[in-house]
Length: 260
Image (cartoon, rainbow, N blue to C red; front, side, top):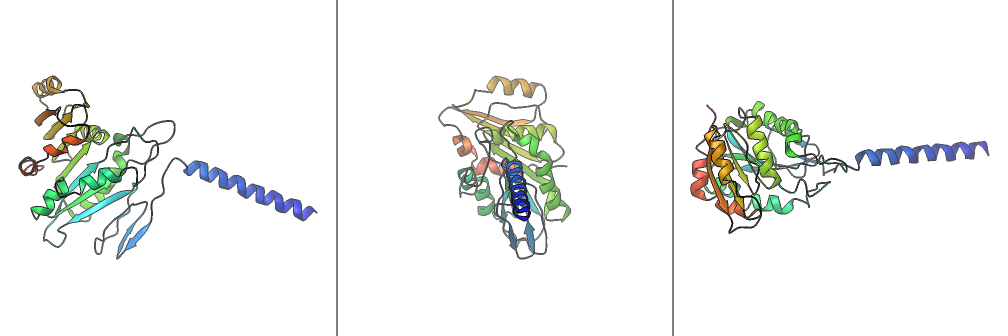
């Protein structure tokens, strides 16, 4: 009888531990773990192979390797998805449309592909949001910078050719990144948000009828020295639709920018 009681107590203890562990992890998603070739990536949604290199990222991330067989270092393009404040817990399915639109033929990545430019596109997930406080892109910068640093340190990307773009909450995150870290990014594109900031980084800014017209605010920031190359209010588009303004002509100008 004593042994049975001890067994029940032991099982009950295991159940409590399991519940505690589940509660601790309930605020985070756990993505698939992939090993492809010599590439090992933790907590990552999808990643193509980069031969002979091992990368460990702290955020789930999709990575698109564009013209990898070309010589030289790649340009690095960072895309910040929207919907951060709409979702307490983030997953691949939550942001699949954001990512699918980003890799479409008429997207920034599509431009790099069609113009034969060697590049790496990182599409991280802002997944560290909990039930009490929404963690925004600015709160994930340390993890994002860790991704950038690994690619730079391994000599895979050109540190003078690092670009950031995003829409909606990702557009707000873009402003946060270039305002706070102008020594990292060569240029930026912010779309579908209404919170421009002072920045020295060449920035292209578009928003739609769903957001406030920022014409006067942009003019004031430019008078104060903000490096906003282009701003356009697009009332003909709904939220997120201003990506149509990323034309080949605009992107050709955009990618002329590089850090000195």
